[in-house]
Image (cartoon, rainbow, N blue to C red; front, side, top):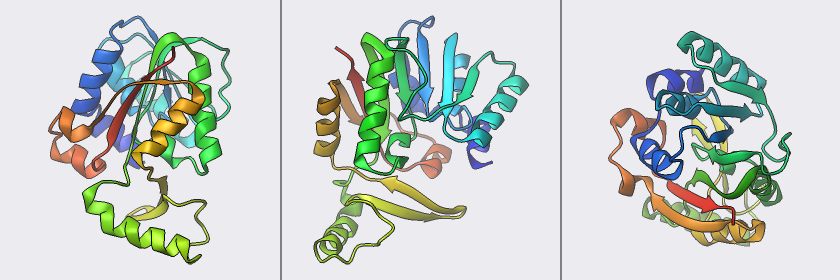
Length: 229
């Protein structure tokens, strides 16, 4: 329900609109939205004139909601249930892909996140772009928290429901939310291991001043724009 509300009341962030339109110039390009939730980014792209969109998510309820919202908005976007770490598509099928709202980092375990990166690499064509976002451990506001967390891991006193340093469960009004918060060099290493070429990375706040509704929905994050050589 939370993501469905975001699809209708928040839509594309100003920063997303700027970056995605600059990266994906061709409105006829076939684009895959991975971890689409209830379709927020796909709907926004469709309203900007993109015509060949497919949204996937691991959650059947999310996809059901996305389809219902799509019918209500009369937007011809396809949605299907799929696992980001095992995409059911042939190689070199799409002209680009997006994994928005820090979704990649909601996948537990480094090997699974790398698998998702590998799958995104596999299904897009050579020369195509993949855009995603992540939080960042080096951000000043979290410096004290991560220092204390590192000390806990070194002493073996970390929470036993975490898999690796950088994992955390954030308490929200709707319950606990798992997310991995990477260091910047960690993301760069993962991209290199998969074969992606890093074209640009920039903090959201450097791209646009988002309205309050967006800042309440998601705090600061980094955009990553990478290309399959």
